[in-house]
Amino acid sequence: MASSNPDHFWGYRRSDGRVGIRNHVLILPTITCATQAAKRITDLVRGTVTFIHQHGCAQLGADYEQTFRTYVGMGANPNVYGVVVLGLGCETHQARSVAEEIAKIGKPVEVVSIQDHGGTLMAIAQGAKIAAQMVQDASAQLREPCPMSELIVGTECGGSDACSGLSANPAVGYVSDRIVDLGGTAIIAETTELIGAEHLLAERAVNDQVAKRVYEVINAMENRAIKMGVDIRKGNPSPGNIKGGLSTLEEKSLGAASKAGSRPLQELVNYAETPTRKGLVWMDTPGQDIEQLTGMVAGGAQIVLFTSGRGTPTGSPIAPVIKISTNTRLYETMRDNVDLNAGTIIEGLESIEQVGERIMQEIYQVASGKMTKAEILGQDDFGIWRIGSTF
Amino acid sequence: MSQTQPYKTVMLNPHDHVAVALEPIPAGSVVSVTCQGQTFSVTLNDPIDFGHKFAVVPIAKDSDVRKYGEVIGIATRDISPGEHVHVHNIEGKRARGDLRGIK
Image 1 (cartoon, rainbow over the protein chains, first blue to last red):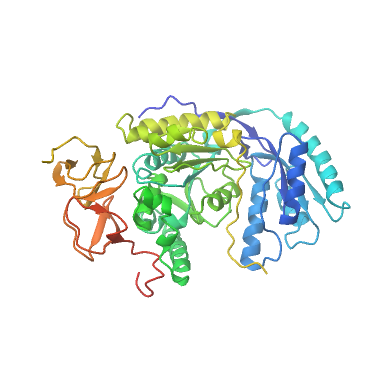
Image 2: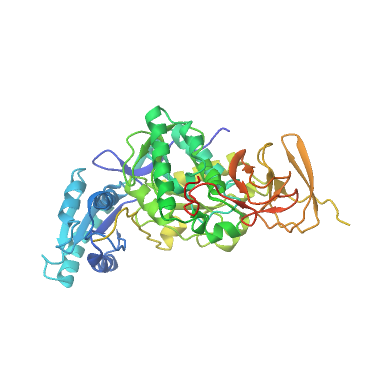
């Protein structure tokens, strides 16, 4: 189907060449002890964002690395103009180390430490002063036309129902193909919810190594459930999924996989890693909505498409999340949270392609500044996929 | 007696064992399901809610159950055409830590 959409959107070109679609100043707490002070700074300085979490200390090995990579990725995301990294001082995830990594890409980054600045109030004052100047500097940067190929579009489904695999997910699959054809990147993730559909993606891998990685990450995820000695159906499909008509994880996965469209699978990246290839990329994340969202945003996704059959409020502090309902009943009952309706496919009123084109139009508009429902409601979700114990 | 009504349903692949109700359908309804030229006429034994599945062909206990042309699980008992197909009569085969050694 021919598209009337423009091939450029209005974005913020960053010093590392990447393009942001928002211009946030991020107050980045590297440790749970600093999250309350970070929140106070955002209360004082308009134009700043932050997130609450419970991590950043007494973490080891691969688990330490994954949390560190997530912090750095959030700061490095091109939707962020500049970063105030806020630490306590004695934590394992040192604010200074995180700031040094973010500084490598050339964006404004400053460190504030509660212990070094003489306590909570002094740290808030110092952080707010720095942030206020960054916000003014950020506001002086103008949007400019940028090609769609600059976009990394995350795709996600949460609160799925039996319509997910019939309406919104295939429509997102259509969009995934369109983004890839325009030279951009589309991320398929939630490894748990690809169990049972992995062969369909492995067949599309660009080479044997990528196909091998598909089975590696699927087996690793499946074995985690098996080692716990439980039927994964106790948690996935969730009670809401089951009420909606999904009976097994495989059924849910086959519906979820349709978000990946039909283009070749270029690469498989770890949680919160930035893709090195354009095209369709798989990120290894759990199915848990917020942990998946955080991984994709930390991996550089500037915008996320989120389909739901049951309805969710999910949003990110730094990346717009476009919520798409799989059925019209949800769209009508949760307008506060849902941006677009794909239920028209179920009713025979629109084709998958027509809904896909509406989503494309929304991407152009949101990438150029239109706010999503989750942004308007301040739904600043953040959650890291922890892969080790806390010590 | 039951009557055939044009209830909205979808069957995704001609190899599938199940179709999906696109609106709530009362028990006793006779529904006609068409997929790529094949038509199945089924009398529903159970009420089928929006988004839920019913069998269009007999499914034997312990055999694979197909939707999207792919395996979504295994039947835990014999299922007749027109029966609600859900967690009470099928189960997943994957990530089953409760069945150690079986995948």
